[in-house]
Each structure stands twice: as C-alpha cells, then as structure tokens.
Image 1 (cartoon, helix red, strand yellow):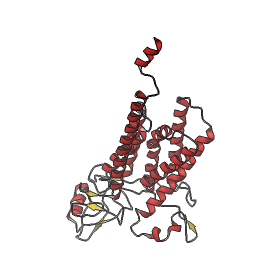
Image 2 (cartoon, one colour; image 1 turned 30 degrees about the horizontal axis):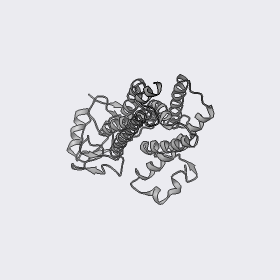
Image 3 (cartoon, helix red, strand yellow; image 1 turned 90 degrees about the vertical axis):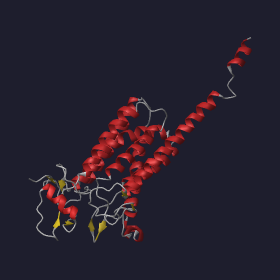
Length: 334
C-alpha cells in the first residue's frame, strides 16, 4: 500500500498559460490586501483620524522596502554561486535572453528587514507614531503571509525533507535520491516504493513544508497576535516584538522539516553532514534557522530595551521635580 499523497497534477503556477501572470504573484497581492484591510479596520475601530493617502503611501513604501530587502538577501545570502554578487545589475532585472522570467528568489528575512527600514524612515518623515502604527500593521501580517506560502505550494517549490508520514507528498520535481544510501532504502520500504537496484534514483515523499508554514507561521501566529497580544499589550511596540520572536521560533522549528537550500545545506553543523533531504538531525542548522535565531535574539533585545524605556519614563514621571509633592501642596493650601 502506498503511504503518501501525490502533488496535485492539476495545479499550475500560471494563471493563464503563455502570459506572465502567475499565482505566486497574485498571492503576494492578496497578502498585501489582507494586511491593508486589517490595518484599516484597526484605524476605524480606534477612531483615528488620518488621511487615506498617508496610509496608502505607508504601505507603498513598506512594500517597496520588502521587495528590495527580500530580493537582495535572496540573491546574495542564499546564492552559493555568488553570481548576483558579481553581476549585481541582474538582481532586479526580470529578463533573460530577451524573455521575461520574473524575479525568482526572495528571502522572507530580508523582506522583513527591508519593510521595517522603509516604514521607519517614512514614519519619521511624516511624524507617525511608528511603534503604535507598527503594532497595528504587524497584527495583520501573519494572515497575509499565509497566502505567500500557499503561492510557494502552487509553484511546487520549497518542499520538505523525506518523511514516511501518511500525509507526506510526492513532488514530481523533487531531487531524486540514490538507493546506495541505507536510509533511502529504508524510507522507500516504509512508504511502499519498490527498490529494484543498488544504483536506483528514487523520488520519495516529502513534508509539505509550505503548508506547515502557511498554517503555523500564518494562521496560528495571527490568531495569537490578533486575539491575545494585540488586546493585552503593556506598551507600544510590544506586538512587533512578539511577532519577531514568535515567527523566529516557529520558523526555526519548522526548518527541521524543510529541505535546506541547494548549495548551502547546513552552514553550521555539529553532527555528520547528510543529504539535504535526510530527516532532521537536531544539531545541524540551516541558513533559515541561523536567520531565525537572530530574529529571536533581536526580538528579545528589542522588547527589553522598550520595556526599560517605558519603566524609566514612568519612574521619571513619578519623581518629576517640577511637579509639587503632596506635602508641598498641603503647605500651599495652608
């Protein structure tokens, strides 16, 4: 009995065959739209009087920062050939041999950093309360992010490592694995794939890691932030820190199920190196885990600094020498 699922053959990355319209790009539009609508909902709920153009421009520059940051990191940090470093003009050039090929290769971590930089710069220029608005903005991001990962699934990319779980998925374009490796033969036997020779190349079922990320980094994280942390934040900017830490933790754990990037594998490893598709070894870390760990640390430091500032401000307010103490007030009344 076959113990896995097949990637749906009816799914195509193209919306209209022959035209440069892809579902992945549409998922980006849906993600931005959802984040925008949830932001507007909070503005209306809090009865904040603000010009519509200010909100539109904030999102415009945030999206520009996201695309620039995501593209730069995706084509440098995640490119083992260093092609884009030696050909930097190709980073934002979507044509090849006279044909439109798009801009394949985006990094979430770079996109987040780029968006933060752009929004902070724009917010300060327009004298916006960046921390307060940032909390509202980030509260809708995970739900929008869900559709970005669904776009990866439609593209049939970013699949996970080999698994014998019943919902493991057979991706037709996944890397074939040699039966010379004992673990490959064992996995094949467990899912019911016949091994006919010692040098056979097999395509084994993988974790649908895009769907894991869409659910946990998207829906679950959004529910926690929207219904709990957003409503019980102790100070402005708190939700931003919770998102950075929460996403970092979830992504770090899910990276154990996701196949590392080709040519990069495990930049930090404390156990024997194995094929990228090999089930997780806990002490071998991917680039995604390294960046996610840095996110977690940054989020913790960020919250500690903010909390210190809030505590210091409240302490100064209590001991403000310009404000008369109760004893001095009583003397004046006499």
